[in-house]
Length: 111
Length: 112
Image (cartoon, rainbow over all chains, first blue to last red; front, side, top):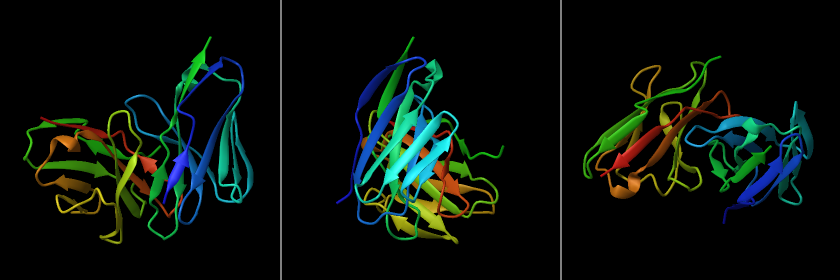
């Protein structure tokens, strides 16, 4: 089966650092994506990991461990506008590009 | 910066009616997708399309659904006879290769 788990909700303080975890069990693996989604809007691409390790992009970093079926998204210097849902998505086996999404983690940033 | 566009932004229809949701993918992209998101639930894959044919479809994408690329720019999703449970946000996405998919703003479909 296909299963992607993320915490449902998280709260953090403006200026702080937050780590959003994602674990996955999928039939095949061809990469893991993180998307940001504000309420009522489209998912916006944040990061892509296909090899183990850390990918850094400004205030956002994403880590992948394929052997553990685990990823995290790290957000630094949190801003109020970072309040959104963060979606973990896995591209499985095959060459169709299909993404399997987790439920998403709703992050609330407080002043 | 090029982006995926979708029309209409909102659509209200009666159960049993046909709807066509339209998408204009990013111009040099070769792979096209439809996803849906029922309110409060996760994003679900519907179908992927490459080289003018469906490359994969989910269990949700039954005989009531079809996709078409009628010309070089548009990519449409048709639901032949809508059901109440088809009410959702429908997202079109496109990608150059099989890496990053870029999503459109979505069409919110409400079936009454």
